[in-house]
Image 1 (cartoon, one colour):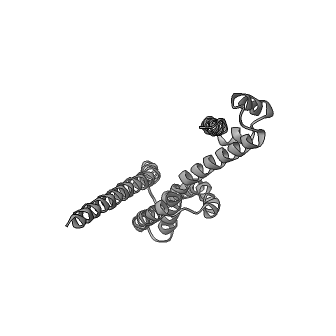
Image 2 (image 1 turned 120 degrees about the vertical axis):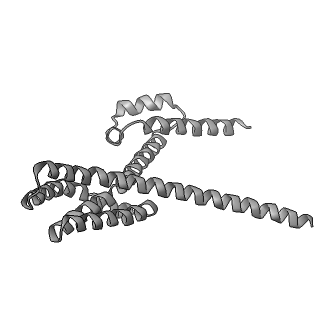
Length: 202
């Protein structure tokens, strides 16, 4: 290996180490990183130029933003389902609202695991701020319909906790399904190769 190649590999390794260290910071901390902190990093990784450091910094910010959006994306079905349940409850009754809400959560929870749209997320993420007043409205609506305070608290708590629990169970079950399907595809591919080798010998 030439000296040039060795230096290039060392530089690449320093870039990876820098990215790993930057990843431990919060997004806000990365976006407001002051010059003195940048200089400290540049002294630790002397093979990287200021431009290269800024490139790695921007990549770290982008990766963390993407991960945050993916996590937030999985909460969208919960927010929509809660709002749908409350709307249906106000228009019809609590039983129908629960059935429609759970159905909405099951359907959207499955779709949102396989589909992700960053632009759409930026609009749908507003829904999380609507669920809080919606819960308060839901409680008031139950009060007007004659529910006792203890039952209102229980129903609102079960709606909040139950919707998150169902969402988590959907993600776990679909993850198992995906893993099983991928394993089956790998096993089928191995079996094909095995039979191909056997046929080739014949």
